[in-house]
Image (cartoon, rainbow, N blue to C red; front, side, top):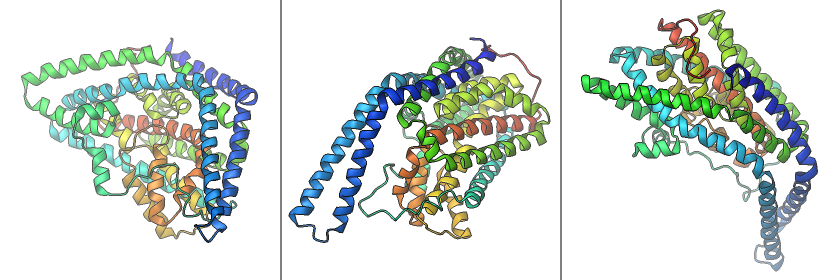
Length: 464
């Protein structure tokens, strides 16, 4: 597939997916959605009656609990049937993502090891690392602060006035415990192969740092390893070109499944929240591009144009990880030296998820507003700092942000059940923040390349 046509094909797949999803929703899925809604109403009514009963030993209480269990089973069965009807579409996206994940882990490892060897001395690695982390930390703080400012300005949850949930109501998302040990578990691994299997990018990066430095330290013998790794990385990048040809099919399947399941009505129900969040992403894009313009000048617009197909892939599949191989290739074509790209880009996927950062403060404070739980400016800043620390190392995959948010809410006595307010529209929001993550990481890599004096002219790469 000709590279400059990929974005066009993806866009066509997006439009076709929306149309197909709407038709499939009306003709097939809507009946199951109606049954699900009726079951939810019954469960809510039973919950209210259960709460009103003071004596839990009565026959009525036991009957209500039995009825609730039965209704929950009915809901589960309906949901399973609905998912089976969507499976032909979800499989297209599922196996495309599997192919991408098959590539990402070995690509990150080999390119980072080669990048470290080409960077050279420990002093050069440290210098580039400091510049990289300076950009990452600055971008993270700006993203979190922007999310906090916008959610306080828009007040999207203030009009909802949702009562605090009962004690038996729980979050459907498992929270991420806030502890130093949990953070370090994301950094270090007891088995490199386990990290490769699970695509734990940060753990792979840490192992690659040790491996790359050790390989460079053994001299001539290490050069053999580096040459083999370099060849292996080029093979993986060639494979990327083949896999990317399937991207439009994956986009079609993903969008069709989302629209078919949720219906276009979900856009109107949460229209205000969705539009406010996306307006925030537009502002964040402008901030990122402006910051890039200060360093890259007019070439920043060329960079954005070059990675548009990678951004569309991330947007359509709701994962920035799917765009990683394409971004790596496009950055090298843009003129970034492979040693910088191989060093900065993998780190960005663990430390520089700008879209996800903004969403975390936006969503957390939205839930607090929905439950009418006031948070002082100091508490909001504390939440911001907690999110900045606990989010490092999260995967660039769908719903990873929700896990971190669920863990943060309990710290401020905000009901974790509030996550349910966002589950219905989270796929739509995840598309925007994944695309933003791609832009942020590409910009960071290009800027660090410029700072290092390693940004050359545009070139043609392997996968045209």
